Image 1 (cartoon, rainbow, N blue to C red):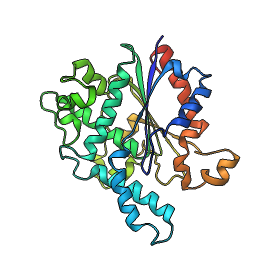
Image 2 (image 1 turned 45 degrees about the vertical axis):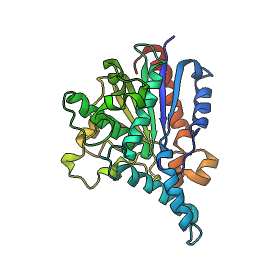
Image 3 (image 1 turned 60 degrees about the vertical axis):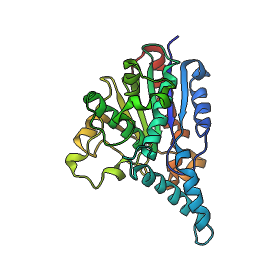
Amino acid sequence: MNKVALLAIHGMGSTQRGFSQELVQDLTRKMNNHFAELVVFKEVYYQHILQDNETEVWHKLAGKLRWDALRQFILFGFADAAGLEHRKELPNSAYLQAQLEIARSLYQVSQQLGSTDKVVVLAHSLGCQVMSCYLWDSAQAAANPADPKVAAGIWRDIQQHAQAIAGKAQLTADDIQFLQGKRLALLVTTGCNIPIFVAAHKQSDIVPFAKPNKDFVWHNYYDKDDVLGWPLAELSPAYGELVTDFRINAGGGILGWISKSWNPMSHGEYWEDKELLEPLAKQLSTLASTGSL
């Protein structure tokens, strides 16, 4: 039986392992209880790289000011973004460690897939930037395999990280192609804040990663009330060619509208919204059955 892999990458802020439990339950219902037989699922968790340091700072400052909950969200969220970008060229930077988590998860699911089975990545918030950087760096390495022009991360020398990724001394050519996204059929981003990272750049420099394969599709979901989530297609002509934006009302429904869907709290509601879950469930089923979208 054909399968499809689904990797879920969390966003900014305090996040615990198991963050995707409700997502899996909802997709299981949407797929008529066929999720487990069709989907190889894996969380990509990078928060442990950052959380202890942020918590230490929070404990020093908490309770001395107003709006503690909001301050904690801002501190943890923007500290995540700053921490991942800070001195990312260093050999063991947070940037590199986050990429290792992606590569390790990709390798693990590759061991459970057939030779033609495809991969879907669902990334939220800061996780969209993390995945975008990973694919950017991997594309640079693929374009220059003998002398990869990569400024930071694991793709400066992927073989150096073979043990950490796969538990072996050397990655095969097939391993590397898989890690570069050669079977990545669909990237789904929600509450994406990539514009925050590129807004200060010249228009000519606002370009996305190269398509990792000819059939690759990128769908981006945003809510107009979510100040941390943005459309992407209008960033530049190159983004317009690669990304299809979908505006949804994250956290919709009567109870959701009362509490969250009409305000910035919608940022945390995408993965529970039927406007995302229903198409994603169909896409997973289609990829498992036909191998293409």
